[in-house]
Length: 316
Image 1 (cartoon, one colour):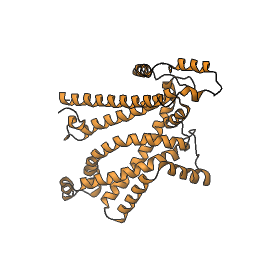
Image 2 (cartoon, helix red, strand yellow):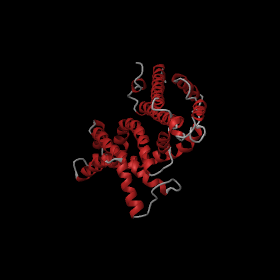
Image 3 (cartoon, helix red, strand yellow):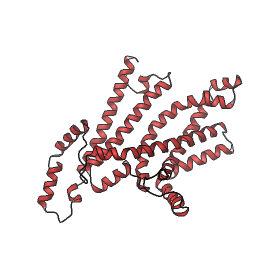
Image 4 (spheres, helix red, strand yellow):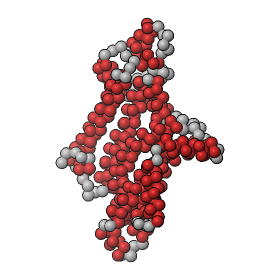
């Protein structure tokens, strides 16, 4: 690795840290200026002296800038505070729900990749035919359909009408099917459309025509030559989609009562549990920032023609 590449990586890491800091700071300020959580968490008949005790215990009696720097200081040490509603460390609350969100997100990403890449490549190979039109119809239908509508339709069909799948919870692997499909289908549509375009661009290259001229079969040309080159832009596409998968998980987990980070975030916002809301957003932002950083580095590794410094947008 060259010195220039190392500088570029450090520059990209610095940008990621700044992005993380800006996001968390914005959330902190918005939550603190949206009202006093003590007024909403405690019953209306609670004596003012008791409410003041809670404000002191939670640090809400301090000036905003004192609360802000105290939060940052604890967050750097891995301490995200204590939940207002159950008095548990926020780190423990997130650690309990994060695996379920990762399971749902990775399952949806895997299913969407299988469907999207298969349909996208088939559409590119059969360009202009009935199969291609069918692929494009699937893609448009997939990414145009709102997640909440798709989720509700699946519950009505498979849980209430056919009674073959559970509508909520996370007790067995059967509970994972409908949330995964709901989250995966819109993503599969976007992947299919992008994969078709990327494959068509590669299929028009000179080295593909050369491979055909040497007698290579269609399957070999696609798997050995077209697909690896089409994966470079697809990889960047995946870096962006990871954030959309996590944001879609918030809706999906709420619809199917899947006990993950998204459902925890919604319930914490409703309860005005500020430490948990801040912790969840910090965790999700960290996952998105790290995923994009990893994709940037992998991009340069897969495509040696692109310098790492240029890929990361760093110093020349």
